[in-house]
Amino acid sequence: MKRIICVCMSFLLLLTGCQSSQDTVEEETTNNTASMESFDDTYYNIVKFEDSELREDFYLDYGATSDFSSIGRGLQILSSQYFSTSDHYMSEGQYLKLALKQEMVKRDSDYSLQPAAGTKIANVSDPTMVQQIQEQDFWEKSGDKYTLKGASFVIVLDPRDKNNARLKTQMDDQSILNYGYECSEKLYEIIQSHEDFEKLKNLPVLITIYQATDLTESTVDGNYILKTYCDGSYGNSEEVNFETVLFSSTRAEELDATTSNEFDIIKSNLKDAATEAAGLVGTARYQNGEIQSMVIEAHLNVKTATELMYLSSILANGVDTRFSSDFDIKVLIYSQDELQAIVIKDRGQDVKSYYLY
Image 1 (cartoon, rainbow, N blue to C red):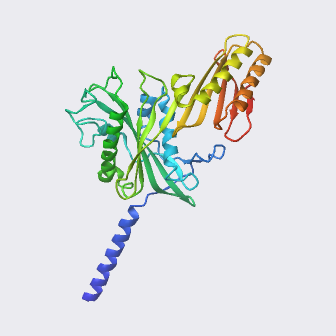
Image 2 (tube, rainbow, N blue to C red):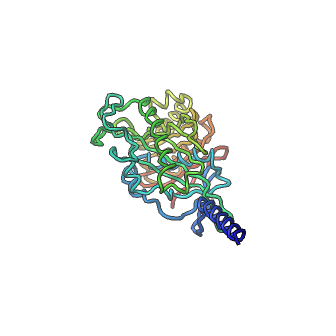
Image 3 (cartoon, helix red, strand yellow):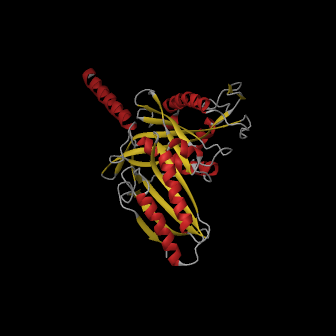
């Protein structure tokens, strides 16, 4: 009789152990997927589960700035080094809830990512450093089931005073970077301890730091500055060199004199060909000092379709032949503020032009 009881208890313990192990594996089923085959292989196929609770909050903070796209797309690019785009689907963050995010940006919370009261950074007393936290999740698909394989987080540092008002003098980059190291480790500790992250704490996690655009100085200078890949423990942090640069500008000349000069030639040729005023502005993205892509906006004042086609061809020829570096280029051509044509040159490909009519 004792032997039977012991065997039964052992069997129950085995079942309990198996159940506990299975609980750590997050699986979902959905038909809401989007193939990204029309994009290049740096993009993830996307699977939709629940909308992120942070979406409205994030949009209110950064929807009107270049950070809106730089934060999300940049996190995907950094994540692809650890979660391949060929093997993983990406979803909106499912685990960081709005209530916890609000606790993280409070100073007096147990889960705060802000400096403790009484802290001074770069001569700013009690600065507000953290404005946003965002999450992206990565899944493997088998049949109709998706298994969670890891997640990426970004902490957005946007230094302000203790009342969350913008600083009159920009905080120096090194002070911001130093704080990034500190709050990255804080976030990892929260992921390991908070019940909302129960499904994530034993999976690989990438934690990144984004320095938001300082709107007193620029409209596009937000960039990623730090990343830490954690798999089983807090990992080694690495500085990240992402940068967004306006053309033409002093910074463009300093960083990439050749491309800056080539852009100026294209701009000059357009103005010479135009009957009326013509303007050209480029926004380029650099990674580790190398240009990756540029979006150019051309603002024209044309009066006929033939004139539009002529100037569009001047631009298409310019981006096809003038730039010595090979990178992705998109030209949006406006007349009287209405989009009229698009010129696209993908890396290693011939230029293509499209007229909207």
